[in-house]
Amino acid sequence: MELQVQRSVRGDRLTHTNLTFNVAVQRNLPFDPARDLLPVAQVATVPYVVVVPSDLPVSSVAELVALARSRPGQLNAGTPGIASLQHLALELMKLRSGGLDITHIPFRGGAEINRELLGGRLQIGIDTLVSFGASIEAGRLRALATLHAERLPTHPNLPTIAETPGLEGLEASGFIGIAAPAGIPSYVVAMLETAVMAVMADTDLPARFAAQGVVSQPAGAAAFGALLTRDREKWARVVREAGITLG
Image 1 (cartoon, rainbow, N blue to C red):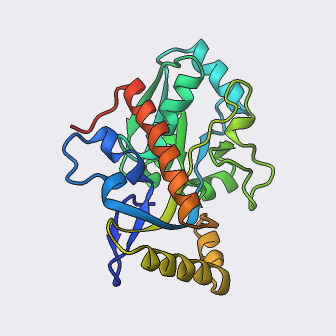
Image 2: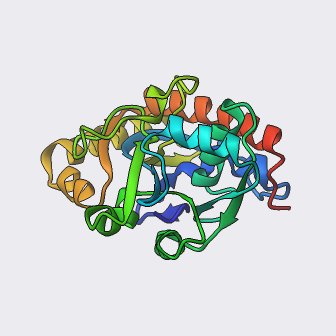
């Protein structure tokens, strides 16, 4: 899913996960999300999965970590770009596993990652289930785990990466939410929050999200703000420790 900020017709903004780490990876960002935007509501999360070619001799993340340790520098992992959340998730997995030597290869999207996995040039891919779904169903790719905090409703047998010994608590999901310009009156924020919750409860939007591999997860301004703060701190630490920068 494209990570961007879009202006809506009412002046509030649809926000995505990059708001939590853009400041850390871009030195000349023209605005500060923490200062210039107010959280209104979260509407959904975007789960990612770790996949490998079906002929790679691993069936779990634990086995993948063991393989990477036995073959330092020999495994390539593809994500949709440098400093994408998927890239940060890879770096977090490497750090939490004791500093795995896995080469990151950035691509322009899941379709390219899928092609390179099937072509034998990548051993690991991280992106949405939608990106890999057809190849997984055909038995050409194997999903090892979701990076979501919980098992996915549509794939209850797919473990979370946090179920891997040594990776407890690891989670890396994108989010979709609404933010408003700083300085907007609190009663307007409250009205927007109420409207978002009504839309999520009374329309088919959750079902439309599910069809795209997105998990409906409405939350109010306070909970969304807490999520932004936690993710901002977490990803800034990963960016710093992994030495990631976009200039």
